[in-house]
Length: 321
Length: 308
Image (cartoon, rainbow over all chains, first blue to last red; front, side, top):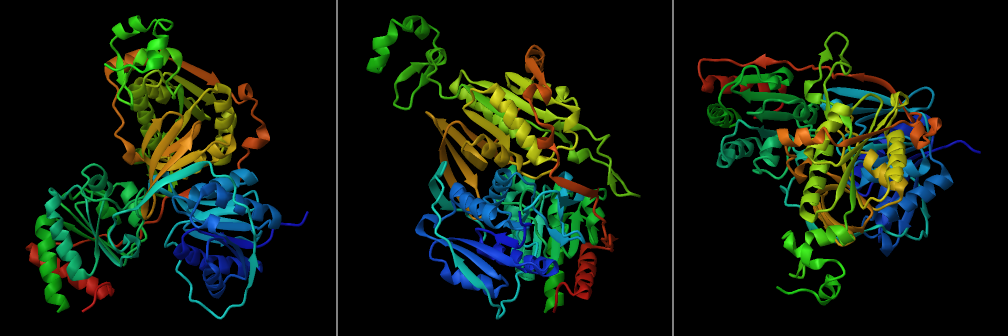
């Protein structure tokens, strides 16, 4: 039997697909292997050409109305068929709420290992894929390798930068695949009410935690965000316990990597810290001098956020004018 | 009170009168009454058995790090039921309270003893706990765990619903639930924040990145839940005492016919290290907040983070 060969990428989210392609291109070059993209959907010919411009040597295109929207069994069947026939060496799959279970199921069908949420990837001198992921609730980073092939890893959003499109040549291969019988049925989909800009994209984030006493006091953060052209976020208790926000920053929420993260009234439990660790500069404002957030902050202010934030707003206005 | 004709017809056969006097009535969807115990007795209830998968996880909030080696001191860290799995159990108990007549079984795969942790699950309302305990599971990864769970669940059998946490508190991989449903070849709905059962169908709401999706599937099915789904109860002293009489079934790998090569890890863990903190940790002080704020702004401008 021939050895597994080639680096493959799949994501049902196109932006994430492109981000992964940039890293996959680098890995494929180092392995001197082919980079293939698996594109599944309906009316997506244009996207296929785009994937080639973004670095894919081959696009396996499955373009049919039955694949118009993500359906786990249908998409899984396609990936499983292709992977069994062409035996890639590496499969990188976008780590979304749909993508991660898809990768896990594919790994189960192929009877191979899977490493989720790799924020760093490399290949060693034995051509093994090496992945790095956060584990133990943010307390540690695990470095892992695979014993089986294809080596399936899922990649979270924003782990890698979207590449620049180039005049790259590639091959488009169409497949006519019958969709596998679905086991579940989508009854209803409604868009999530989120802020218009995704917090992962924000360059500056002003975040609050339990130190915020009333929901109305959010205005303090909003005002500061306006001056800084940033976005407002929060830690898990404000979203989950107090329901003042619909989303939060942290290991189980959004993992962010802004230029500036200002944590106001956030104690800094490990799960929150894991979500902000990749920020360039972290500022912490907290009444409690012992709060663990100061241990991972570049600049710490021991003080009441109700006094510090207005003062900060004024200082910024003065300095930035 | 309206009674459906078929109920009346079978009333005498099923000792309906006695049942009525038990006064445990349940309002049906069609606004007619069916006694709860009647449902229990004759299996109208669509949820005979719920299986909840529980992981004994390292309590990450109490995990210590050796600062000189950046190694985690996992061996001395306290263990507990993984948070997300606790939500799954709570949801099972709520379903049982609503529908009645449901048996809740928990399944735990562990290389070490997990009885203390499993007792808590029984106190919360599980009826029976299965502990698959084998020293051979030490190096087990998500693939092996899902395989052992599959074999255990096949042996328990007779289930309508499997509830799992979306991910685990310590390893946070989120792979076991989808792997398990895949190898059992049953429908799965992941990342669920709301779930209900109607007849032989499970209906669940999942929160995706940009949408909320309502999905349904025929049971038996697997549902993995998020922490948002509920607030797990804290068992009362009474419940804890009652739990001590409940059964813990312990099986080894051999009891399930587990093949050794199938639980071999498919992943090599090269190292697990606490991240280096390379933060400046500068405390900004001053006479008053205005001075402090100005110092911070200057520092941020110097860093090139904010500009004029």
